[in-house]
Image 1 (spheres, one colour):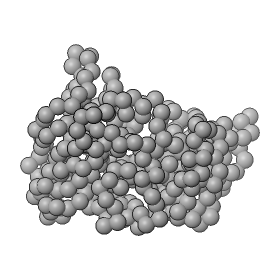
Image 2 (tube, helix red, strand yellow):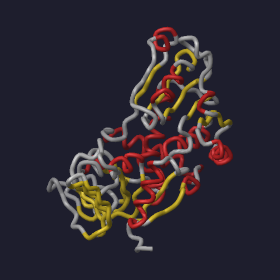
Image 3 (cartoon, one colour):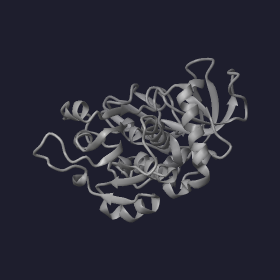
Image 4 (tube, helix red, strand yellow):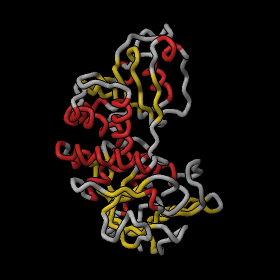
Length: 330
């Protein structure tokens, strides 16, 4: 098979396309023929040196993939099933989706709804899965139709899809971004308003800001998440999945004990089978009112991945970069 292999040996990093046999860590792994993968921020972290994310010295990159089951010993997945593959150690500690074939445990697989193609599934990818999981988490905690939801990091894969999902479901998404030139694009995605990062909260000299947001989806972390917490309305929640700004959180207990706000952590890596089914069903349900191609920044081949990874690492993308693993060298 063709694969994009990342290796760090004697502190020397190499990332190159080559021929590599698919490897299985367990005889019960399911073999999937890959149509598409996608480029995520985690992929960029794996393909860096030194990497705090990559767990082995050499592996095929790609934390997600979509394609068709080729061989399976699991009764829940049959040859010919169209699936999304993501989570666990895929592309981090074991070979991932930047290849024409991938082995994965069945717990990493999700059958795709009939309304979603494998192309759509990788436009969605881990990012869109995280975005929908965030929306569902806010709904579980009482978010009401028409309420105002802040989305930070709105030009990224998670943020841009969260904006659209919220809009299509009947909420009022406000997009926060450090890229003001993308305002029109975000409005086209469904944002009712676009604000700068420094407009999230006010009254910085006080422990709490004005109550502004009925809910929030944070893809940034760090100081941004701290500002969200101090500006949520009473009883509101923020679904947090990002740390591109920082993994540190500087806050106080005041938002939690005087405004009863909730900080919800969103994890797509070890999501349970039940959670995966629920999220992919919700994505299938919304497919009729979402043009997933509108999120695509570009489609690249395996050979073009180094530049794509650099762009994601630098924050120089808008939306999603898809990987056509079967495309020939340019």
